[in-house]
Image: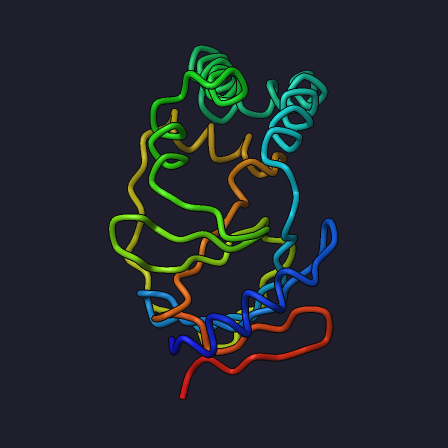
Length: 184
């Protein structure tokens, strides 16, 4: 990504007053090309607080389903681990989250610079994804506990936070009706 494009993108993102939506087209490492809509400007702590509340609300309906599919012990452990993960993120004791926060310099809402590599990232919550070209993915072999936690996460927003490196996997970005072509 060229310096002029970085400055133009920063100006586009700075026009965002609060929460806004950003459209982008990207290709991932599995050759999947997709169009996405990201919600930029949402406070992660607010999402986690809502997810904690949502977790308590879905427990009574989802626990029996997961118990039947994975067993009661695994279902309960999955709920407990998801709750613990949210709580450690909220109270600031999640070491991975702390490391991630310290690794970046925030330029403006939705844009951050990785201090060590110098790469610029566009970040936000994935609202919609439309696959344009299907990618090639290997078969996933997960433990029952992981599968149960994945089922729970389908009802939560905490894992929908996405980061895109601007100099290698984005083709175009649209913010407030203005499109910046990145791929040449």
